[in-house]
Length: 265
Image (tube, rainbow, N blue to C red):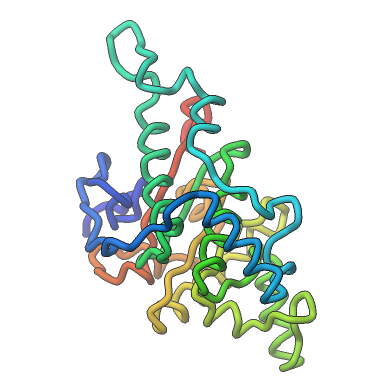
């Protein structure tokens, strides 16, 4: 049995072969039509939010705010290809690759589609993960997809427990557990509270159930996969570590950036 790859999960990176294990991504999203302009997408999004009463889905602070690669580049100029170390190499190739992968995902949502594979987006605080999630959600709403509110693993576990006791229980008085199972777009953030140690079992159920319905799931986290698996005391994420499967929805691809000083933990 080959060693598990904590860089890509054995699935390859979103748009290239994994430099760690050599796996290439299985399949790719088909080309999708794009809107004419950014302003058109923004206008359509705001209209959709009003018409469909989706204020609960997008927090007011993020409404009309969209992910922008240039902002991350401007905040991290020392990591860009224009900056070289004394050996003539890029200061941080991983950062550039991280931006390239996020850009590809962003282009799919911006172009009116939804990626056909589940994805883990992993990066330290301050790298626009939440903005990226809300940006993708707004594009999806603008193009008529069903979207569930951003939820963390604690909320998701609580929703599951309460829904099993009270079938009509709803989050924000509107969204049921089944909404998270059946919506076209679902983003989940891994909590950074103490309860992160036992909340991951819901990720396994969510990803598996959505995969059976042909739906991808999108997870954002400040923790690397290696750290998540170390904390997963019930081994609930073991089923996700399948390097040989071609099921892109059940076995997520990884878009990750780890600052060198953090040593990958």
